[in-house]
Amino acid sequence: MGRVLRWYYSLKYGAFRRERRPRDDRRGLVALQIDALAYSDLRRALELGYCPTIARLLNDEGFHLRRWFSGLPSATPYCQAGIFHGENDEIPAFRFYDRRARRIITCNAPDGVQYIRDRIHSPGVLAGGSSYVNLLDGDADTVAFTIATRERSSIFRRLGGLRMALLILVHPVRVARMGLQSVAEWLREEWERLRHELAGKATHAEGIFPFLRVFTNVVVRELQTMAIMLDIYLGVPVIYSTFMQYDELGHHFGPSSRVSLADLRRTDARIKEIYRMIGAVSSRPYDLVILSDHGMTPASSYRVRFGESLGTTVQRMLEGDARNAGITPLSSLMSVAPPGEYVDIGAQIVDEAAAAADDRHVRTGRVLRRVRDWLRSRYGVRELLWPQKYWVSERHDVVVTFSSSLAHVYFADSEEALTLPDIARDRRRTHLYASLLAHPGIGILCVRLNDGVHVETRAGRALIVGEQLELLEGTNPMDRYGMEPCVLRAVASLVRQPNAGDIVIFGAYDGYDIISFDDQVGAHGSAGGDQVWPFLVTPQQVDVSNERIEDARDIHRVVMTRWTATEERGVRSEETDRLALRPASAR
Image (cartoon, rainbow, N blue to C red; front, side):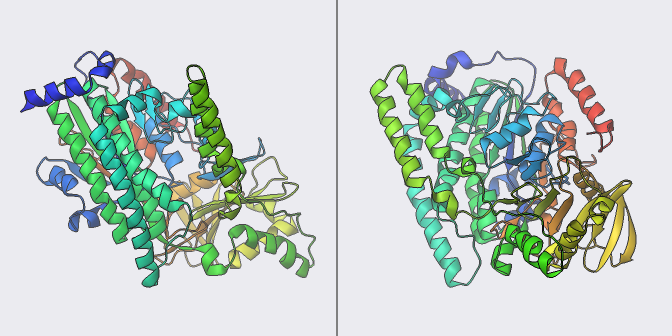
């Protein structure tokens, strides 16, 4: 049977034969990330039978399962930078403000992710390998659906380029199945949303989401599986791919919802195909690692609960409440996300395709540009209907960025990050701090001190220095968010990052639900609940159960570098150790 399969794949992938890697003694790695799947939710999915392939790996193949601590923020940009490069400093959130460049960085936009990539200097563990459906490329040679790369490249190349187009051509049956599955996924989305509405359950209603769901849950998942299987045949030494479908559904339906957990069955089926491919070819021996970058906590929408966005709340506090208190307010101007964050992505992709077609097919390029113009005219204003993503003052006195359960407030008239005494010296800043503290949607306010981080709730305040907490007054602010040393250390490290806000806010958390500043029913970004506790599955020969893994950088050190080429391992280990030994304030 093995000989027949090898003959079949040799015939099928004949067009890629020149890409086949010479066989060497290096074991290959296939790392599959299930985005935002917490350790506890994976255990729940295993118990309910949603992940039979992972269950078989654990029960019959000797694979190991453990949880680990993601660090803060519990967000993909921070975690993937740590996993790929062992370097994830100055990434305080999915959206944040660079006060020196006076610029909002949002990882929904390619430019925002590229901003992060351009500031990473450590080598990536995917050098010589492939990166599929990741935010960062990790120095990979081959990328598809990867947003930011070491060298600037076109959207067409980041989507896989001609290689992905050729791969689609050699899978006609799979492409036909993809079309049928797309229709089924759209019908499934409409039925599930209707069922949740009739049952009175919360979902995040977003007009374009059904189409995004079809694209991510069917098209992207099939294409990345096809690309991984091709790479295994070719003998690519390291392959890292993210299955992002659970994250999207978890945000919209909740991390423990039947909808989110049931979709894991389809990802599990793709993992089964990939594992079978590993056993069917002889290009090189491969090890399979399955992991998540962070988890997710059930959430309630701040806007739904309080009738306004966090930006509107800050505006009201600065303008209305401040005047009532006899304080001259800081200037204000409401703003939504810039058009570049979402609105022009489709048109940009079509524009890239038109440019690529111009050389040989001028008429095709002309038609594609007409499609581009139609997209811009038809959907160019839809950004106005999207929820607010950040808030910024007219003269840049105050900037507020928020992503899921984490928010940052910047007093941007200062070029330097402020400490609690700096805030206390300005009556207007003090008023905003006190008003935020009193708001029921706010869980913790975190502010820098010279010797640590001050954390405060309405019921108490404390000082965090390193991984030690000193209670200053009232009840412990960190009780519900986690008192483990790694949590305390991560909070202190997050708040003291140069690009962190002058006030860092965690959504209110009652031990089960956390407040999300985005319209979400599943959230991650701050501490509190399962969002900081992802999982790691490793093969029998890679037992890391006794290793200390308390940040995504530790996954780089403990796991990923095991498959780094021998001649590069020493250099990479020295770089990782050097970064690990630097104090958090210097990183």
